[in-house]
Length: 125
Length: 146
Image 1 (cartoon, each protein chain N blue to C red):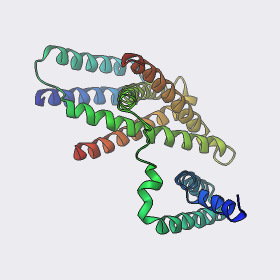
Image 2: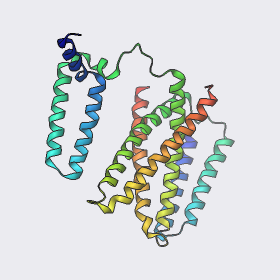
Image 3: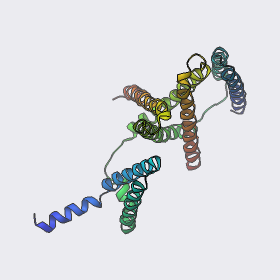
């Protein structure tokens, strides 16, 4: 588990540096390559190692945390997006941000219901 | 039904958990609207409503758990539904954060070609950071709890 954490930190640093540089320069290719390489290294290590990477407690904590985060996050972005779109005459600069937030909440809900349907079938509806 | 019975029934609506919850959400909305619009009258209305909720909650302080959690004997969510919700949330959150960051990177990196989408890119980054903060805060809370 310790080795995996070290590897994850190194991969995250590598990806962050390359993506940061690529965004600063204004070219997309190095960023995409760095993300793909990072994901591949992490995946290959996970598949090849015999270490226990995640126990039941961590999984449970992660699932509970995700649920709370999703609830708070969806409500917040939907409300903020709604306010920014409603106030477009006073703050026209933030209208695009408002639409982005609203679309994000729609994507979030769509994804959530797709996975809900999948797990509902998986665990016998 | 006697007239006093009807009056009591109407009064009991104002003390119900659902009404207090709806009123709290409405008051929060007023706060946010007042602060965004910089309108003192909206904020005053929010303060009055908040005081009213505070008074009701103070009077009913011994029954707060019943008001907000409802009747514990009623099953709202079984273990299977809870499991499905948690698994779906984990997958959704992971994919959403990944997609948001990727789209944000693409939009910001291509700012010379699509300058009109630069703000959307920054908003994507802000969304991802907000999501991370929420996730790690709640994770720290549950790590302590278990």
